[in-house]
Length: 214
Image 1 (tube, rainbow, N blue to C red):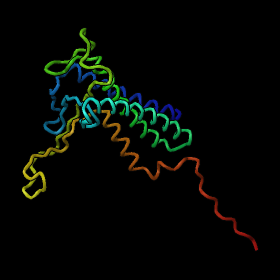
Image 2: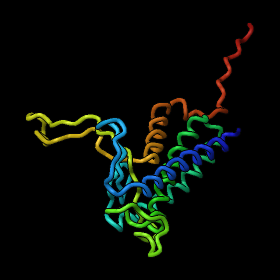
Image 3: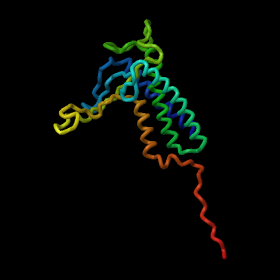
Image 4: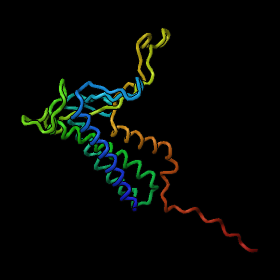
């Protein structure tokens, strides 16, 4: 299997798993509903967000359109970058890492672009797929489906803690999805293996100097 095929396969596998999981959540659960997988540590919690990864928001409706368009441009740029990496014989690990980021970006773009048209509202009801009266939003106005919630640590900040003294904290608070995870894993792999990744395969070690015979 060529490196190009491995990259495409990575994107397809991640994207398929991400979308299948989101569709199951969207068509089986109401907004805010949750399933406790491992007690209070791992919860499937259905929520939707308008903005960036891990439920972050960005500038309301106008910001959402800007963000969606930026994502599309970014995806095109990432695809071009992957092609360059492959042609210049960079390590497979780097190509796969970038492919994970690409798959995650596409996964969340699909939610924003099409879910509003394909699904009914999930508020106080289980969403209907292709409802007769149309979806809950127009093109690029859909919401990203999130479901993974890991509130592993809960407690209160101590009295002496600056700014948040005595306030409640939860770690890890953000709710995220498989696409977010793929992006995060891809970024961490690049950061961790950057010295190994950014050396082209065709770079040869310099030949030792030839000793002159006197």
